[in-house]
Image 1 (cartoon, rainbow, N blue to C red):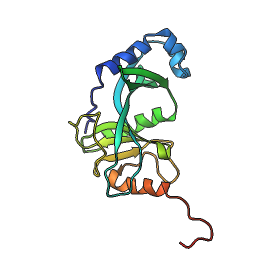
Image 2 (image 1 turned 180 degrees about the horizontal axis):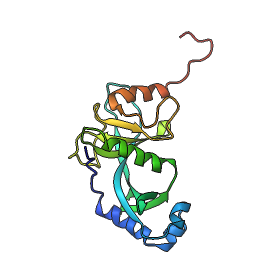
Image 3 (image 1 turned 60 degrees about the vertical axis):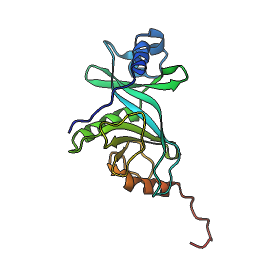
Image 4 (image 1 turned 180 degrees about the vertical axis):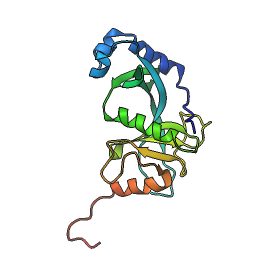
Length: 195
């Protein structure tokens, strides 16, 4: 089933296009692949980036907030970098280019999601408490991509590298993964204390 990729805000896309057109922005980027590529570059697959500020015990809806839009930067058939935008008081602006393991992991998770039978709206969900990034497959394909919280039936696909005890690229329903994430944050018992 195809993914229903939401359109990015036009100012966010324009800011990425302007950065790609700026020799200074590309040359000063800390992305060797982006600096060395020959030929045209294009921003594709805009994904809203949401942050889960605090993992809460099961039974409560997780609270998320939109922090940016991420675009995969393609040269021909391959992604060579990503560009992130951020919302400022003046609107959407380019933040930075980057590369690294999350780039290929995002592409892999998107291919996995394309093979699923259920239609989804893809988003990224960052969980800073666990140093974790997931592909968030939202079940409401017509939803406003800048708002909402993960529904219990939504699917999260942890991207590599994932935290210890959570397998990367294994899809989980939110209702199943949130309790696991909560346990990952529980403090270890003190030695000699009653269990």
